[in-house]
Amino acid sequence: MKLNEAIARRHSVRSYTDQSVGGAVRLQLEALAQELSQAGGVSLSFRWDEPRAFSGGLAHYGKFSGVENYLVLSGRKRPGLERAAGYFGERLVLEAQRLGLNSCWVAMTARRRLVRSTLPAQERLVMLVALGHGKTAGAERRSKTVAQVSNAGSGTPAWFDRAVEAALLAPTSMNQQRFHLEYRDPVSAGALPTVRFKRKLGPYSAVDEGIVRLHVEIAARVEAGLPADVLPFVWTER
Image 1 (cartoon, rainbow, N blue to C red):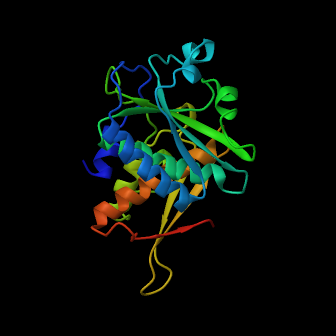
Image 2: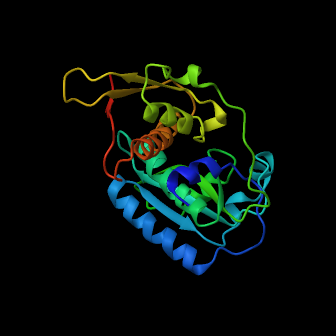
């Protein structure tokens, strides 16, 4: 399964079976977590066979059941931490999907104080991701339209159109999808076009931005037929 296929197949899953996550899968995810942590300046760590964080009233309120494995996203407080946690955390989530696991991003409906107690004193907890073998594969959720989140249309390239579609599949806090993507033509001959990401205020919107940016990059790269370290555009903040 390729990453763009994992994007299409991943849905939020809140109920899990008691099937254990195999050792080989754990090793692959642990290795990637270490690599991504170093690349992103974040801490991505797993808690295996640990049900306490998703027990009690909060988990029940969030409709979680059977969660015994989860990913912890944390790091030293700094500008850009939340966005990096979203970007590199989602890359790990997509890898879990490729390996046959299901997942769900979790903001508040878990015992965060318990998880914080396991972190180094200088680290800040950003979010959790429940992982495991879902009782179902999840289902599609309601979504905004392409026109609501971008300027994609008849004048934009195919890679941007696919990128926006992938952005709409990104998990966002409370499914708010509070972002807008704007394609801009190259300013001069030989220059790359730019894409502006406008983040609207909302709970965990910085984490959402990181997740959406990853989806955009994966889809754009695949549609344009480019290698893993090349993009057909440049991000712009203005």
